[in-house]
Length: 116
Image (tube, rainbow, N blue to C red):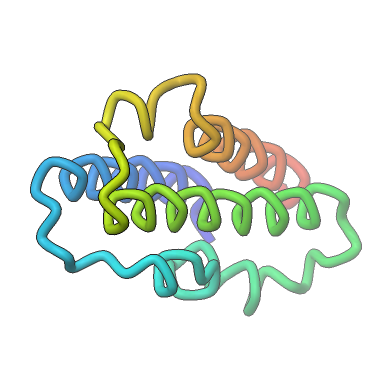
């Protein structure tokens, strides 16, 4: 896995969610977004990356990645239920989503160093 590309893909996905909050076209489903095995990073974590299962960094990445997907699914669930969820509030720096997202990036960087 190219860890730098994983970070870039993670950032791009966050932008897709931000765009979704602006458009709210119903294309995002909380149950699907909550699954941490569907994105490329999740597929790597639960597939090829499992060879690193003995590393603490791998475990941290797996946990933080699942936390991120749970937080993203919650944002979408709130939008679908009609709760106020502007992009600034739902994805803002103090939100669970932002904290989980930052933790994923830090975990990817730690995993990159551990794997090298």
